[in-house]
Length: 472
Image (cartoon, rainbow, N blue to C red; front, side):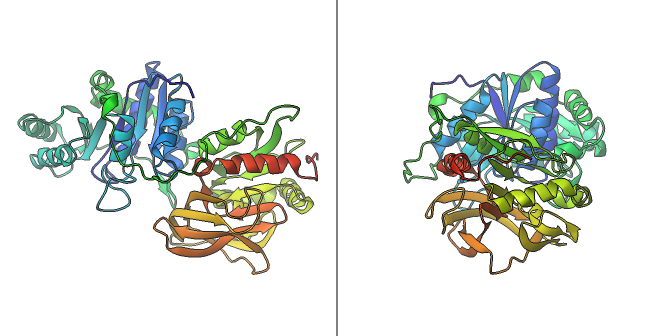
């Protein structure tokens, strides 16, 4: 891959979750776009909700930067590709700046990603009930890792002009600290609403929320100084490489060329199904797929001449009534699975393939009921090994992913299990990955960059599946 010029940018981090990273990130993105600046958005970690908000504001996909899914070389390639055509980069961090997989290293942290990419850090601090202690906290974060550059500070939830003055005095009177680039007042109007999986999805936000965030940022931040924060030296990138092992798997699978045509794969995309890693879709396209979007909520028929389906995650439980009413499409999907059409479904898409979600009738491919729970059922990274040949790959293939859901499915033992599942640390979690004919469903969101051969295999499986394209 030819070298790409990386635009200037910054990584927005905080001492802890709940400090206001996402609101600040979206406000700054919206403000820059108002100015006509093309912003490349990114998110540290496996989250798929924040990137949806980024994409809605910036008008381009937001890519996940996760050192569990990708090694350093792969991650930098994804970053460079995502920067193409942009004039500025904003990366939203995850949790606290130095929080990762353990208390002993930076692995999996926002700090590690900032160092890998050579980005300065903008630290947003919840300054409620603080005055001079604000400077002590900032000083500790600046000195904790000398290889990391914290180039500016934002104080969030500032109570008054007097409070702002105290914070500024504390920072300016302490030698060696970065400048205070803004004091954001408490403002309930711009707080992003939440539901059981976290923030509401971008498609579900009402009114002029983005404009309010942009106004909030422009009124209280020094945008010009933010844009001029100097980058780290490109030669000074540090950090640990998590995947020291060499897999021999290229980031980009070879394009399918010659007499072969593009393979038409349907992608469920609407308010109910909106969780996809952009890198998954890109790798499918690189392997020869033509991705055709459709809406299980509103479309009465599948797109014509499909050779496969990909049903991603989302919030089908919030739209179960409308999904149930669309009986024609549900029956088409059930019949397609019965005919042997290759179908890959994860989390919400998997629930949609069950008989019911909270008693609302779904597709009925899998003989099981999905039930919503009042408490979280599962959360965490997953290591996955295929124990059977599947439409995604042959037996023995390994891939990494993430699981997060508030529902459960009791699957009959008669349905084949194709995954051997474990936590990031290696603790076995049993079997999962349910297969019926050529339909594969699971709660785990897989990140194809952790094994790009899966995208190539799935496209090839769809291409050579002997039932041919489905035409309804």
